Length: 195
Figure 1 (cartoon, rainbow, N blue to C red):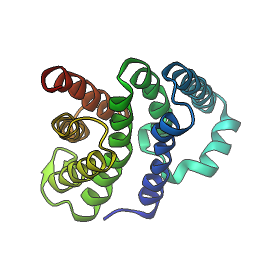
Figure 2: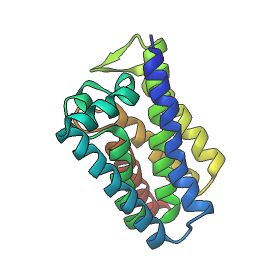
Figure 3: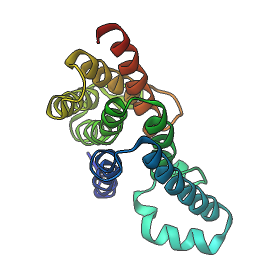
Figure 4: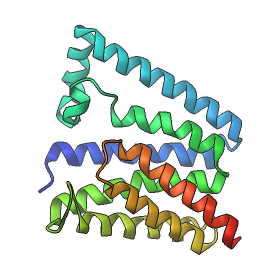
């Protein structure tokens, strides 16, 4: 069952959608958006490093966010939010705009769906994840791809499938890194074959 703290964390995860939608509507230039994301990423890295090294900052940070943080974040690793901002820089800078946008949307919505569905209904385990969560991730990513209609369907579906695969991988790398890299690189590859 999903805890209130995890649900709150996932609802905050929706704020990640600010990044791809800002890229579409506010800062449509690739270089401008990458620089803006780099600035935010550096700020978050500095905050995280300060939190890890200064007890009084850690105390303040924990007061506001401790209930939503994962154990590895509490023990001194970067938060998921920091990884989102870090990975958004190369995703925006290196990938074609439409693919970058989809990759970041898949990261936000797919991860949320996998967690909420997996924790609420997951029975069939795949490592620490569940088949039901993965199906939820795939379903939400496909819906997002259909609604956004940014690239040919075969390209976006390949990205949705790989976002799901990378979300479910049992490796010790944050999903916020794996999903956009896996989905984005797959869509770039699929575009070279099908477009």
